[in-house]
Amino acid sequence: RLIRRAFALAKAHRGYDIHPGPAQEPLNFIHYGYGEEYRPHCDGVCHRAPYARGGRVATLIHYCKAPTAGGATVFPRIRTKVVPRDHDALLFAYKRDDGYMDDGHTLHTGCLVKHGDKQIVTMWMREDVTDDEPWSDFLS
Image 1 (cartoon, one colour):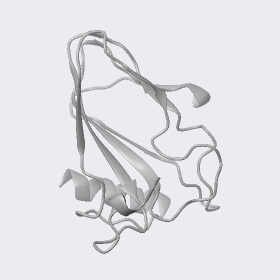
Image 2 (image 1 turned 180 degrees about the horizontal axis):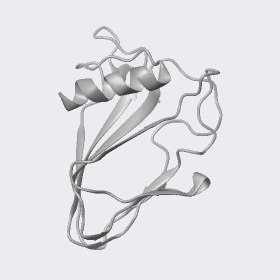
Image 3 (image 1 turned 45 degrees about the horizontal axis):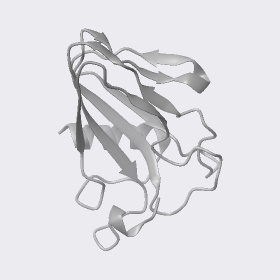
Image 4 (image 1 turned 45 degrees about the vertical axis):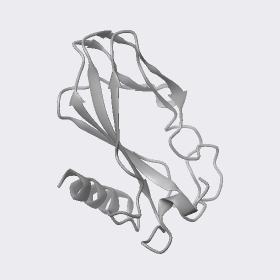
């Protein structure tokens, strides 16, 4: 149900031609313990390149369990900090309306967990993937 809702939200707000199913990348469960973090990165292309068919266009992070301290998701280029709470979700998109990809605004980091555990499920959404051409057929 979460997967269908996430795809519907991305379609409604961005107009992406995306469909949940086995052609998409599998969900990723990530556990962060005390002192763990994820260094700054982009989930998709973030250097203002034209969209490449089959590429990632959006990410949903579902915070299954939030730490009691630390563990925020920070987008440094846009000076935005998302403090996780249990069962919250964060959706961000990186394909622009003009057909080009983001120019660095979706660069993000998973901050250091200072107390407790952080458990997330990450869902990457791709356009132009089908059962005949699943995500694994594309390089990006």
